[in-house]
Amino acid sequence: MNEMGWNRSGGGFRSVNLIDEIIVDADTTNPKVWVPLAPGVSLRPFMFDVTNGQWSSLLRVDPGKSLACHYHTQPVHGYTLAGSWRYLEHDWVAKAGTYIFEPPGEMHTLVADPKEGMTTFFVTRGSLIYTDPATGKQTGYEDVFTRLALARGHYATAGFDESVIEGMIR
Image (cartoon, rainbow, N blue to C red; front, side, top):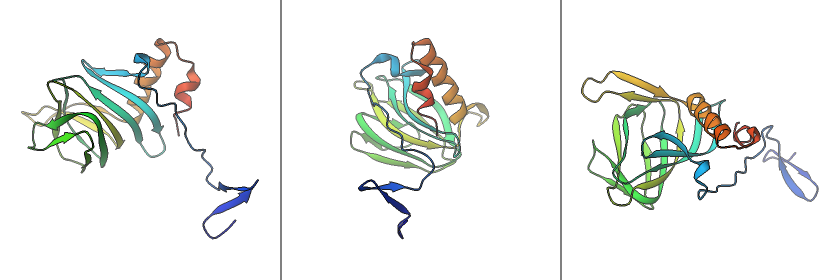
C-alpha cells in the first residue's frame, strides 16, 4: 500500500475500499426503468446508499407537472440535463447545464417548464419532508428506504431480475 491508500496489483492500482464501485447501465430510453413517483413525475435510480441515507437518480417531470411542496433534512445537489424547472418560492430558473445546491430545511415546490418539462440528476441525502404549504404541517416523507422499496416494487412488476436493484444498493 502506498501513501495514497492504494494497493498496486496486476499492473494497475486497486482501491483498499471494501465496497466495489457501482457501474449502472444508465439507459434512460427504456420506459420500464423509470419509477413513477406522482402523475407526470418519475425517477431513474442509479444508486441507493443505505448506509449514508443517500440516493442518486434522474428526476423527470413532464411539462407543467410538479413535485409537491417539501424540504430536505440534508443538502441536495442537482444538475439539469434537459428542459428547465423552478421553485414556486424563488425567481430563478434551472435550465439545462445549471448546477443547483439545496441547503437543508429550505421549503420549495418544484415545477417543470410548461412546454418542455425537465430531466435533472440529483444526489439526495436524508429525507424529503412533504409539507402543506399553507399550514407548514408534514403530509408525508421519503427517504432512501422508501425510494428503494418503491423502485424494488416497480422493477419487479416491470419484469426486471431482482439483481438489477440489488446491484444499485451500497
